[in-house]
Length: 90
Image 1 (cartoon, rainbow, N blue to C red):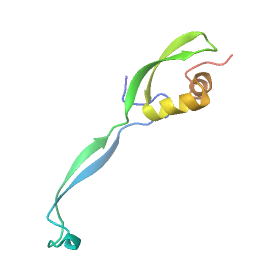
Image 2 (image 1 turned 90 degrees about the vertical axis):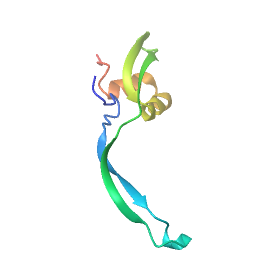
Image 3 (image 1 turned 30 degrees about the vertical axis):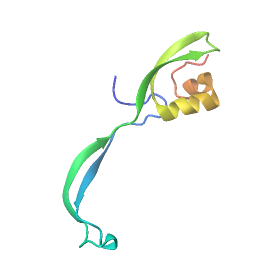
Image 4 (image 1 turned 120 degrees about the vertical axis):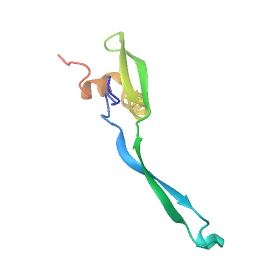
C-alpha cells in the first residue's frame, strides 16, 4: 500500500529544512546565516485502523490520517467511507 490516506487523499509533500547558524540581531548577535538547505519529505500521519460500520454490521480496515479519524467521529463511519468511495452504495 502506498503512503496515501484513503479518505483525505493526502500524500507526502517535498520541502526543505533550512539550517541556520548565529545569534539574531535582536538578541545581540551579528545575525543569522543560512548554512545549508537540505531536501526532505513531509509525510502524513498515517494509521491502519479497523473501523466498525454499524450500517453494514462489520469492520473495515482502512489506512487513514489522524485528521480523517476526527472526520469519522464527527460525520460517522458509513457517511465518510461512502463519500470517499470505499463503500459501494446500492
